[in-house]
Every structure is written in C-alpha cells, then in structure tokens.
Image (cartoon, rainbow, N blue to C red):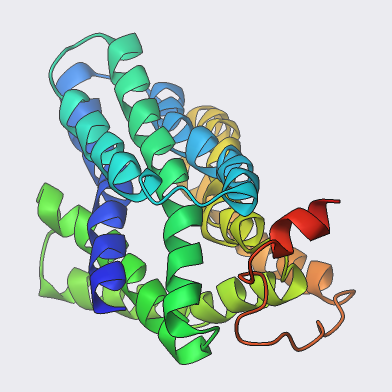
Length: 253
C-alpha cells in the first residue's frame, strides 16, 4: 500500500500544480479570467469525464500498465505547458496531463482495493497519498505569501478531504462488480467535474468581481447535502468483491 500511496501522491502533484501555475501564466501572458479558467477546464474535463470510461475499461480487463503510463502523461503535460507562448499549445499540454490523470486513477484504485482486501483503512492510506500530492502541487510550483497562508490552506484542505477515502470506498460498495467504474467516478468525476463550471465563474468574475464569483461557491455544500438525502446504505460486500475471476464478466452478462 505504501508504494501505491506514494505513486498516488506523485500523480496528484501534477494535478495540484495546475491551479498554482495559472497565476504565473496569467502574469506572463496577460490572460483574462476567461482564458485562465479555460486552462482549468483543460485540466479537468478529460481527467473527470474520461475517468469513468477508463474505469469501465479496467472492469473488463486488468490493465496495470495504465498506472505508469498515466503518471508519465500527467507529468509530461505539465512540463510541456510552459514551453511555448501559444494559448492553444498550453491548453493541449494541460489537457494531455488531464488525460494522464484520468488513465492513472481507476486502475491504481482497483489495485489498491485488491492490495488492501477491501479495507477502509488500507484505502485511506491510498487516498491520503493523493491528497498529500495534490496539496504539494502548489508548494512545488513555488507559490505562497507567508506561513499564515500555509496554515489556512492546510486547515481548509484537511477539512475538505477528511471524508475522501470514505467517498471512494462507499462508491465501490455501491458498485461492487464495477470497482474501476466506481473509482473513476469518485476519484475523477466527483473531484474534478467542478472544472467544467470554471469558465462560467470566469465570465461572472470578468463582469462583476472575483469576490462575487467565489461567493457563489458557498452554495455548493447545500446542494451536495440535498443530493445526498436520497442515498440509501449500500449492501455490505465481501472484502474481495469485484475481484474474483470472472466476476466482472458475469456482471456484464
């Protein structure tokens, strides 16, 4: 699990680096809010929308090579994003990184569940690796204005991600025969689909103020709470549920 957790941290450093890179790109290339939000869209649209697709693929067959390949694409895209001044090339490079993130997560989460034998504690270590990596992304890029800001960001991150491992395990419990699909949704779609709305927030910020655009986000916890009211407790699966030979094929049949 320590190896899978460390790999998860490395992969998510690239994902966490994108928001931290945007201020530097804006300052150097004089982008407006809409252009800046388009880069966030590039990072999230592929990593979120395609993760369930990769999840369904890994439910049909084991593809462990997606773990190193996805991590490599994620890092290469971030590296290429700063090599040119073309907005299109930067967008495509960041999108390539998002594709790598999408390819990495479902298969790595399937391997983590198998290694932990369905243990929530084991999955917590795997999820924590990703959270640590995501938090380190901005630090690696080089932001930040003082220790007080670091403390506030750390506190917000801890509060935000406390239930993260439970989300992953719960999603897999709801779809015990579709562990890859569930991982793609919880690790990818649910985490980064918000990037699809970032251009809308950029337009609002350009026409009103950044404070107004950010204030709208305070409504999201209420929306999430209302959406969760209709959920039922999933059936308790066996620890190895979804991993027996042929289980995925039988479920698909």
